[in-house]
Image (cartoon, rainbow, N blue to C red; front, side):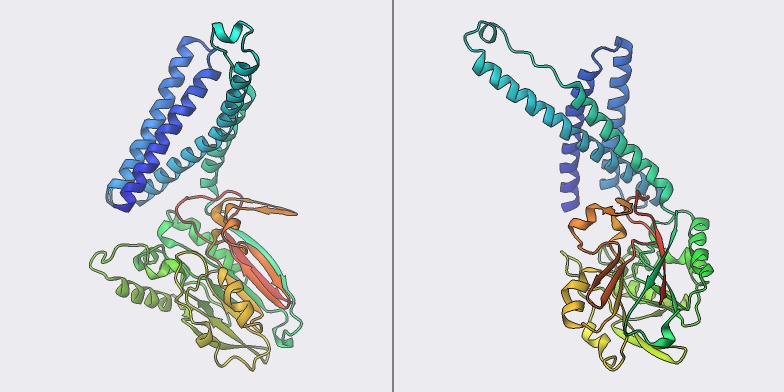
Length: 416
């Protein structure tokens, strides 16, 4: 019921934006031929009609209708179209405010001049502002469409980490880290396999997965078990649970499986992959005679409605005597909220979760993404004193089947 109400509100916004944008387009194309104007009107309203129809189908039909892949792309296109019109409307609104202020001034200062009283004041639209809005809105839509091609464009990022208290035997250790697979969103098994092969090619001493293997259902990983089971490393493959792995965002039971059973199956699947799932616990790993604890907690968030299943005090207990510690915690908000203030001897925390919003800008000297207004630490390496946090922007994708600027990443750490 709540989702239906939200869909109705979105549809009303779409209709208002459609009408508003159409009048602007009609204004800037007033000099075109009659035939061209008819074609523009037909194409515009046909696209708008299809978008609203698509949203209705998405909101009021079962998930099986039209198939997962088509529904995912259809929803992404609708949202991209909606935001492109919102961006364009900002400039249209600025122009309308300009026209309104100009009209008010004309009524005040031209009163009695004969012009204002005898006929309405005509103030034309700014062609510059109108075309700027149309151009930027169209550019955003084009960029989102281009982003579809980037969802499997895996990037290897090499990161050197230096710690003053690093045991000598750990120098030179290579750790491959990836997060947020979201296997329920995949639609290209060969592309997924290329990413896994890239991880394998690094020949890391240790492989770590940061959570969110599935979107909701444990069965989503089944078609990819043969791919991810090929991951292996001398020191092992370790993982934690992310917020999506618990099935909190689905209505259970599904196909006769309860939420609790679904999680149990997912835990079994990770074991079948050959991964060691750390659920509020730690393991002691060794390399060249040096030992360190790898601590893994269940999802713990300090943002919004995300749950706190993690128990770091429990997972940490027994690691006090070790001079160097690595922690896996899916949600990076955990770092500032509990890890740094309460566990200052946790040297390195590895997180995921944010996806970098799958949209942003990363160039030398400048990084931006809308997610930064929710998460202070959202992508890459962060340091505070002797403690470090690394946020991986994700291996997979969720919702929007693409990436713009923030590409899927496999991180390779080298301890120096």
